[in-house]
Length: 341
Ligand SMILES: [Zn+2]
Ligand SMILES: [Zn+2]
Ligand SMILES: [Zn+2]
Image (cartoon, rainbow, N blue to C red):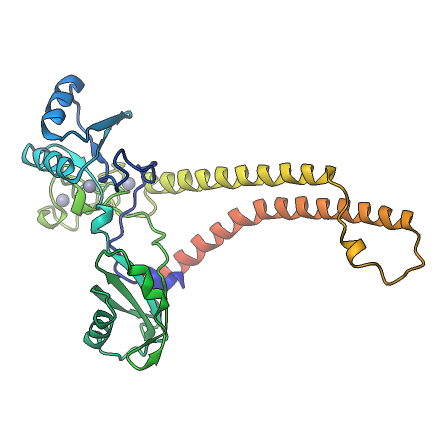
C-alpha cells in the first residue's frame, strides 16, 4: 500500500536531527520542538538573550559543527524565541509542535464516490473533527480507490477512531496511516530534513541555486540548472544529487547498524539456549514409537537442538543478505515506475 501513501499530501514533519524527542521534559508535559540555529554566534551573548526570552522552565543547547540545537521547555519560551529570531532574520529551522500535529488515519472499503462532506459530518457526530479528507487514487491508472486519508484535529481520544466499523452506510476498516518514507525537502532553503513552514534560513532557488525564492527566479529557464546543495548542474530537488544519495546511504547505514545490533543479540541468546537443558516437550508429548530407548532419544534431541541452532544462524545470515537486496529492488522499481509516468 506504500504507493498509495505517497500520493496523499503529507504535512508530517520528519525530525531527523531530533534524537531525544521521547525523553520527557522537566515538567512531564510534551516539550516544544527543538530550534536549530545555523549562524555564527557568541555563545555568552546568545545565552544572555535566550535567558531574557525564556521563562523559569529554562532551556538547554547542543552544539554541532554547523548548527546549534536549542531546546526550550515551555510553549511560551518557544514562541518568544521563534518570534525574536524571525524578527531579527536569524537563519534557523524548527519542526511542527506535536500538539499541533494532526492525527492521520486511513479509511478502507469506503466507496470512492462517497461525499466528503458526509464523511466529515458522520465523523463529527462520532466526536472526531477532521481537518482534511483526501480520496486516494491508484498511482498508475489514477482510478479512485475505496480508500481515504483523514487528518483529525489534535485530540486525546483520536485513536478511538480505529474502533469505528461502519461509516456512511458502509462496513469500513480504519487503520493508522503508514509514515511517509521519503525525506522531506524544504521548499524555502532546499535542505532536506525539514519543511518550509518551520524554516527561516535564507531562501535558495531550486533551479538556479541563488539566494531567492524559487517562484521569483528571473533566470532564463533554458539556462542550465545549478544545485543549491552541491553546485552540480541539476535542480536542487534532483534525487540523483550527491547530497541526497549520501543522506540515503547514511540512513541505510544507521538502519543496518541497528539491525546488526539486534542480530548480535539473537546470537547471544542462541548461545545461552545451548547451555539450557534439552526441551521437555518429549516428556509432555512422548514419541509414538515406545520401543526407542531413552538414550537415543536424548541424542536425537541434542541433534535437533544443534540443527535448530545451525538453521537459525543460517536464517540470520540469509536475512542480512536479503535486506540490502530488497531495498535495492525497491529503488529500482520506484525508478521504473517514475520513468513509466
Ligand atoms: Zn529550510
Ligand atoms: Zn533562481
Ligand atoms: Zn546537487
